[in-house]
Image (spheres, rainbow, N blue to C red):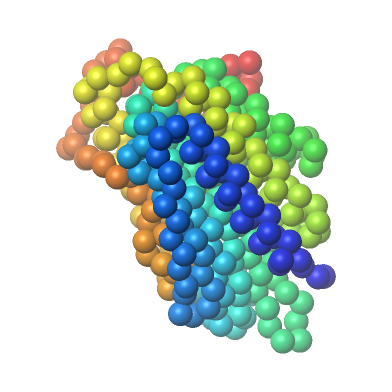
Length: 304
């Protein structure tokens, strides 16, 4: 089966442009700094980072397209049939850390992978998703987020949203904390069962769904009043983001083990974060309320 690598790359670079333009408009002050880079083993990319804005403390939107002659250990452990193949991997990945604790942190990623070996059919798949990590959750924001997620999946089958929502809940689960990283969204990987064109279309739908899912939440919350207590709780909860990315995230492991650019791989880290030994929120407080949201829930059924 033929795959159109050029078409995937064109979509991803255009998506990076659109997302950066929209985030700059939302922020109203700061601009992305672009950093093009090359990888000695093959390929490269462009990292774009916005810092110290009016709305966003830090936002990173990275495009990468890398090649290699040998699969990293993290990939062959997941897919043993990839051993001995060369590979290409490309994607757009973003993480946004707002100033205001009432604006959720968010992550999105869409990607394509192909591994080839002379005389064999290529092994390829798409992956991606987006997820939301509030510190002070609003039900209307969570409902909107999941409504957009479902709408993007709907053309591809009634069960797609439910399956990808469940996958997101399971993937972004911090086992050592016994809590989800946030209120979920979509996650999928190893997508090739629909054939190239339909699989590519589903990946595009997820990538194009991010801005309409996140933008209204930012517009509603970025001017919400907050104080030092809310700021300190935000910094404490950001620690969960660091824990997940360094312990569990498959993309982080793949990037580091394949000789990727460390600065780009770790751009998802928050600019400020804190840990506190045996922190417990005050019972009945707004901070304690968050913990009821950090478990898999059927948001559309509960909040609609």
